Length: 379
Figure (spheres, rainbow, N blue to C red):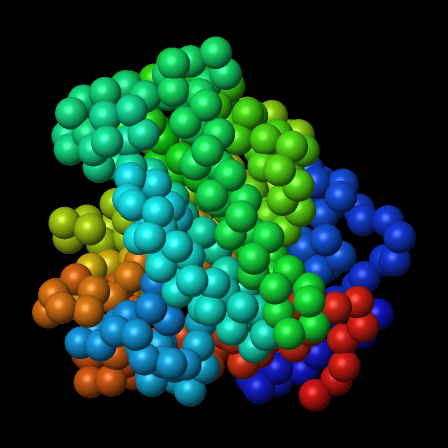
């Protein structure tokens, strides 16, 4: 057993068992660093939670593309523990544009890994059949899932897109030649209707078939072994059976999550009890299945509630002995004065966010020491 004492004097107990991994990771050929990260995320979730922010390194409130900058770091002195990126740019664009996007993301992923942080990947997948947006209303209303599955007219095109993702996964090599692990979260919020892969636009059978093929093709055919796969509906479930309605099976999912904005203040509505109930379903199910769990997206746009971080978010996260690896809030737009989900210097919730940051339960990047290695040194 190795012990890390973080800056807030909270103790993190990291137990690594060499040669055998106790938890239900689906890739038995995962890289050593990916296996160790998986184990550590499971253990961290028993006493702590990691804080994450989408697009934190790419841009923030009033800025973009500045090295080693994030709004969270400007407020706390530390980057988020979990950094969100997106594979949106890996399809529906020219080859040159895709290569430019990949090069930019590669720098951030490697930098995050070498600092000891963690990358999670969402996929706002441009409709590969219509050529339109990821939004149903902007994709000329083409239900593409049945066409990209095995045997579908666009299946070969889908394989080409997955090859682009695999090429990226193989490219994120650090200076020591190890590959940066990533939490890959495809087809999120599938229980809603706003994306072309949403529940009203595809059958349960087609959704599961595409999910299973995606994992198998990346992992078993294209040799991607640095992904942890996350399954994350929105909030349209009230029971374990509801949550599992489109679950592709334990052999195809590493992490159980959900995206929840509605219970956390969107449109002025707060339902702490409802949020806790749904997170409890996920946490209990993950424990039962030996999987990871996370609140994969949440937040309050513009953060008008000055004490939202401790009175709402932290209150939910600390309820019912939840075991969640991380919580991620959405992005801070670089040009919009109102589209932001994490504080920046001068924003009204900064004092409360610092209380959230200093709480021993929450961990940021500066608190992480050695999440990818077997032996953790005391610092």
